Image (cartoon, rainbow, N blue to C red; front, side, top):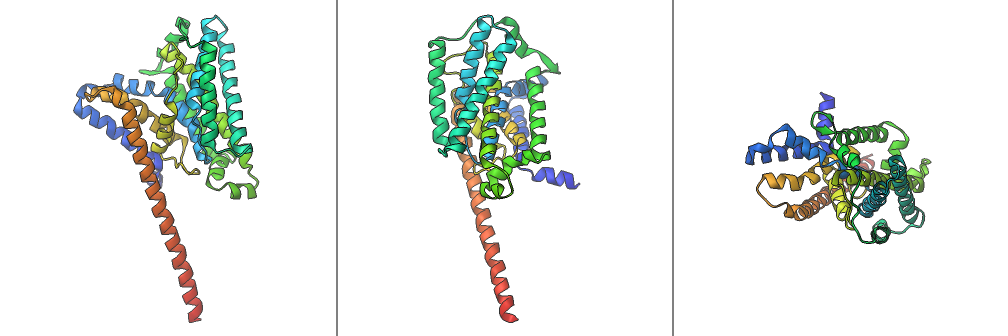
Length: 336
């Protein structure tokens, strides 16, 4: 019973309930949505967003942000897609893509954690550099004619209607969640995001933790870029554009506080499923999918404002409790 109560109080539980309610509402509006094929399609189409959101969760949990994830995805997709198109070995292409993600992560971590540049400014600059690099590398042309086997693998199923990519993404999220919550070093990320100064006093390096968070964030974006190649089958110079906003929205929707130190990758993954399914669900509700970005923006603003109000009320309540405790102690001393 205590375990159930704890689960219901978890921040990500609210997101899960919201996702279930969303599915129910759409099913009531259009009963044809309520099928295993459509439900599976929602999860299968969310794989790229899940990976980016989980990576973004690391950056936000340590109290920073990374708005270069979309361009990282696009650049890796461009490089890997070009290598596969030109007949290079698949494993070599994938390794190159992951290495690019590691380098980008180290650059972001160095700029933010070591040099002390505000994360929004530095990663925005990296975003612009990567966008330019995409255009230069591809010459502004689309990366097409990828191997058929590589593209067909995106539709290979493993569990019912769920694809291999989807099942692997779920397992990866669970593994990362367990590492963050059940291991000592995994808790470093939350500790640094909650109180970097206090974390340093107990022997945790905020610089090393933040650099690690950025490397993980970029590597997850790189993996997402490889899967993006496989699912879409081509890459343009604008691929990945706007994904950073959906990743942030997914994290906040999943219960991760933008101030850092609060949240989990499970919540980010659930939020990613919600954000990625909006355009798909709009079609079943009889609306145009062109409203996707507008709805994403409204959801992001609403959740951020709601989170800010909750944190403000919590801080006010905490101040009142401290004041009441001090007043009580003072009165007790006066009576004596």
